[in-house]
Length: 211
Length: 211
DNA sequence: GCTTTAGTTGAACGATCGTATAACAAGAGT
DNA sequence: ACTCTTGTTATACGATCGTTCAACTAAAGC
Image (cartoon, rainbow over the protein chains, first blue to last red):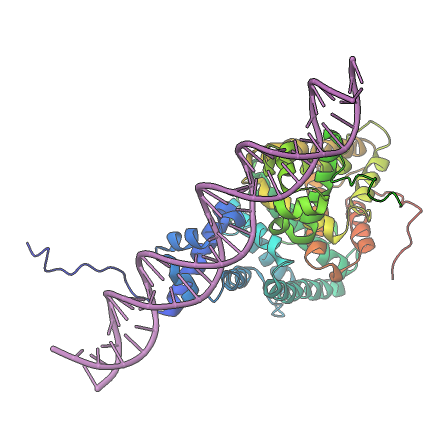
């Protein structure tokens, strides 16, 4: 047995890029489990499987990590208006928002925690303002394209604001007590909402209606 | 001059009821100013103008104060269906939600902070589940009464959920960046939303439309 | 005016937080 | 095989947190 000849690896070394990505992922898990109270250096490092001091080697500050987490999380959601079919764009927004990968308690708790920090963390505030504005403008421009052909029963600006508020509100409710309604109910709510304003989207086929 | 004969009052004594109410008010101010990070024993007591140790005399725990704060804040908002005119009830819900006393950044930041604690604080979770259920059932029952006479273009359950989500979502948006839209815009959004589903309410007269 | 009650103070405690820092080791380059 | 770079560890530090507790006093009751 060459057990003693095999040198015990104390730790494995990774590139700064990979390690940062792992810390971002670990941070999201911690936020999802314990909210901002669970977002501590100890727990994040334990979740990432690294020692306590390493987090400040890759991020100057814990707030800097939080901003990176926010940037990472918005990358999945905020979509630009690519000039393609307008109804498809709106459907994509809804589908992404209510995909199981996004619409689950852990992820929504992470979002809620971050929202609570936006007003006090300046860098986060700037980042949010920028991304949110882009998000809303995309939806508005798509709705204006729709209103050129179909009759949109309200101005695009209001409907865009309402759609975003509806999505965020459903996220919030589901996060606070997920037994109140189902994912698919929240999802169809959005289609129903747009239909009420005269925008009918064809539902993606891969969806099984719920009782 | 009888300056030395006037005994200097070190502190004034108040009933437990009054002091508790003051601590609740002070806690709301702290939450509104600095979110959950500003909700510390030091800051709350300083805001209330009392010494540090007194808070645990009136509340066993800081979480207990938070639950009392939540209870106090919901008292203003959650209304029961009293069987009166249905449209008036809905209008009252909206008016209360978008009154200046409720719909301001400080108050909304307090709400956002509390929401972030609901999933981790058990007592708060129970309280929220109870009050929220009552809130939703009230709106649902009113919408069902409306659908008996007028045509409601969707089931009452969905519209109730959407209305609540819309209100909460508008609260959230306005809290995160209040320069994005105005109070009255958010308010009329709700009336517009209900109108899209076939429920037209007469707007209260005391409102000046905004440009 | 004295006793009693109960609201109030301020210091102290242990726990936990984010960050800084010095020693160390893994792996690439030569 | 050796050096060098840099990712990594472990400890330590000061600050701040929520809570406890003994001493104190304002105010009511008699």
